[in-house]
Amino acid sequence: MAVSDHPLLGAPRATLHRHLLEGHRVEPDAIENRCYRGVSLGLPPWVERLSWKTFRKTFHRDPRTGHLRGWNVRMAQTGLDGPAEPLEKNGKPFTFGHYRVVEPAGHRVPRGCDRGLLIHYGLGGNGLLDPLRFMRDPLVALTEGSVEVLLGWSYIDLHFLTPGTPSYFLLFREGPLDFVADPPREVR
Image 1 (cartoon, rainbow, N blue to C red):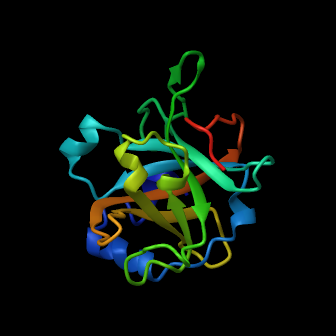
Image 2: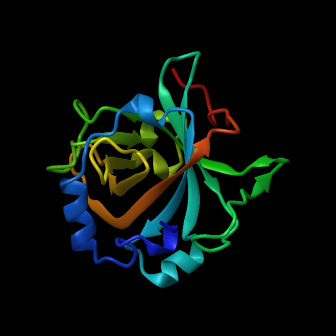
């Protein structure tokens, strides 16, 4: 199925949230050292025009720490089914929003969002002034036992409150990881 043919593209946020709450566990080993094409969902078109519609999300098992970590890659906006072309900065893929992938247990997650994994930007080595440090993304599989298409949603962890954002995303498995980015700062 082409990315542009996926039935959740254009779905209302309530439908996306229902799929998130009904999603399936993602086994960390099944996504390690892989790249996914991300498609932003749920945002108004004017926000997408100011930011991006497609991106790459990566998952890398760091041999030094043993943690499953990752980063986002800015992509040329070639359309949902166009070629995956990373933008570059200083001759390397333009990465941002580094994260660690953790089990949701022991972390603040909105009710029902503990079925899959948690992308935790606060553990990714982002700068102290980077607002992404407060972002969290529950991540689930849409089909039990398959990591071909994943669904995520962003919320903010304010330590006493976890407000959701309108931002959902689909991740479509692309292939093996071809570039390992260093975290922005040392992570233990």
